Image 1 (cartoon, rainbow, N blue to C red):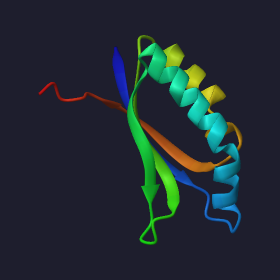
Image 2 (cartoon, rainbow, N blue to C red):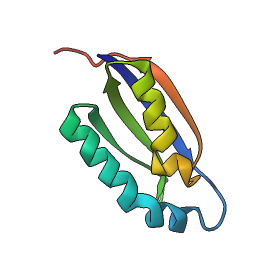
Image 3 (cartoon, helix red, strand yellow):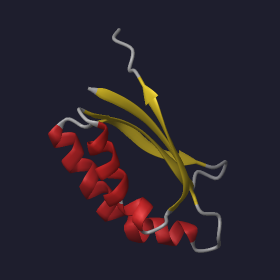
Image 4 (cartoon, rainbow, N blue to C red):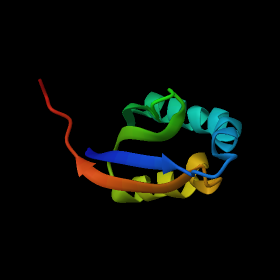
Length: 96
């Protein structure tokens, strides 16, 4: 499987955290499904100095790059513009 590191940053407008919290249940529902299907390795929220969520980091894996594109096309945080910008890099989890 191809593995990917996703680093995503939330918007910085005044309602950014509220927007994230509104969309979060849909995002987590998708993550749960990906975990059940073996595509989610790990992930979580990035925090600022006050402990508030400001973005996300995930390691995902897919057999085919088309599956990655499908995730990008359907991810609620992307569709609902919670993530202002995101980066996808090929990644390999260390086998230790």
